[in-house]
Length: 388
Image 1 (tube, rainbow, N blue to C red):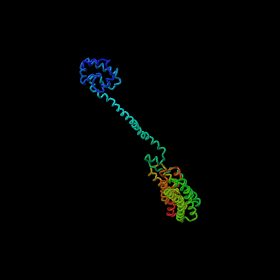
Image 2: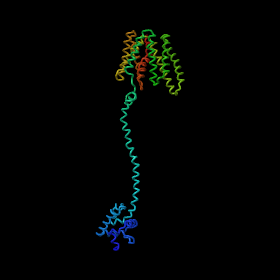
Image 3: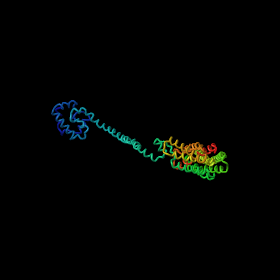
């Protein structure tokens, strides 16, 4: 070892290529034919101050002067301490750390995976827009969304029109029957159109025209016969026009469900138009009492009152109107019963017109005509039953 000792501290004797080759195969620092030093021999050099000093200086030059290409060894301080050369075998394994880069490559697909995390917040951002969209809904849909009843009554304007038409019936009843037929025909026209629109069938020109013609035919037949023959005339006209409605739907090329729906709507509209002609067949005093009762009942029902209170006030108003009208035309106190019955039928008509998908046209047609049309049978039957 004394022969090779000067080669450690001397810089000209250092060969970087030989140093790399020796580090790959063994543990010594010698050149060529030098006997390889055992790993523990370097600890002796570490024990001496001079050897440690040379070794430290040698390590400094290797780390900064010549061994820049071997940075993995310097990074672990293997040349700075001689005893670390005994563990130089893991140094060639440092390039094996390069496959650790796939960990970085595998992290890149995770970045797009992290991007969807902000996306679930989008539905939460759209949630506050839901109350604003209620303004664009129909009145019945808005009422359901707010937890209220979707049934919307016609209101004060249709009630006022109903009252006007009822007053026309009451005023023309004492006159000749053809004069009374004028408001009756107007009532039948509004009834036919309103019922089809109430059922969502529009324009339905053929169905409306057929129902209106049924009412006109009934009026003509009633004017040509006695009042006592009114039930026979009404049933006969209704039977013939139901056959016409059936033939009309047989020509319809729609689906079976649509044809059945149109058939039921057509028959119902025809029946209502025929029933409205009951005012023309009833006694004049009964028509006057019934008209006054329907007018006050519809106006009272349109008042902004609670539902139960509104119904009670409307019935009381109808009974009071019946008594007042009966005292004026000689019908007597029996007008209270007739007025109460006519007012009840009018309230049923208003409830039917308060459909859950209302429109202005429905309220101004069905909401106007149905109270008077449904009150016609009560006026006719009770008028005859009470002896007038």
